[in-house]
Length: 360
Image 1 (cartoon, rainbow, N blue to C red):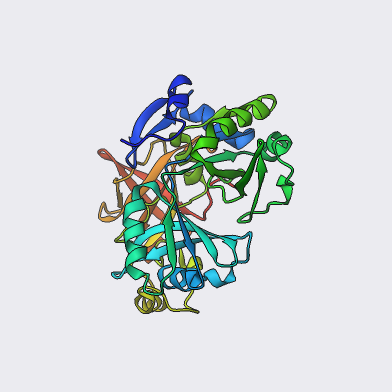
Image 2 (cartoon, one colour):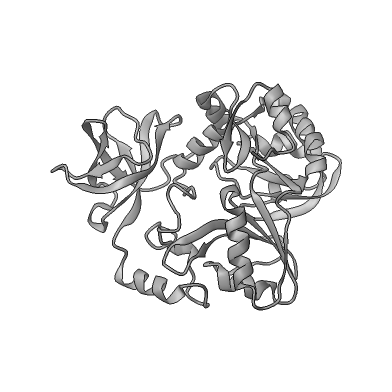
């Protein structure tokens, strides 16, 4: 199992460590609800160094990215980031990712930890334009500092104006006395904040400084379990649960990052699917009664017929009710539609709702 540069630090803090995407990662420290509420109301710091980073450079870097990704990366200017996905040849998704334009001909692709090797091989296999590719995943660390007090708590650590870094923008600047770190605002929690990309040799120093600077603001280290409840309250997809090699971006509600103004892998088939309408749609739902929906549970109609399955589910700490995502036929996909979640022997009534669940 791989370690991050901070594994021993998490263990010293008493974190419960679990295997995640091939890494030994902290799932929680004090408890999921406490950590979740810390991010919603104050500020927390996540070690998400397991994520993968690829550098794609050269005169044909954009051409390669355009051919493998669904979104239109030609819209990116230096200092901007974009959420996108890598479609496969059969209608599904290789991975979802964030693309950063670092320089005129330099792009950083941030991919999911479980897919680093798969994504690298996939993009490499499509690189017939001679773009230069470098896999930086093992050399770089990533901290996510999230919460409404993140900017105020961290401003003393940098000469950059953190409040000026708007959503899906970034700067390369100084942070905690280290030069040339990426400070970006692409948070996955819905409570504001930003991410710090740095070298493995720098992350311990930065982690310590972050906790020092944030102490007066109630900062706490946060585990992956709370990261999951936070992203689910926002209705954000998690690769391996809500999207995978068998789910299309159209049915997953990712049509907004699927731009048919350019050619990319499987574009024609996806365009045809969008035009005729997908056979199923990913929806958010809230339970009407007590219960906790879980990944893999059946979704049934009023007659008890299975119409879909839950892809993500939890008891939402900010809402105090069971929420989830799942695929259903389009007839059940409108907000207000009534469905049932099969929790053991009981069909618990639920209502399809417009995302996000958490409105902030």
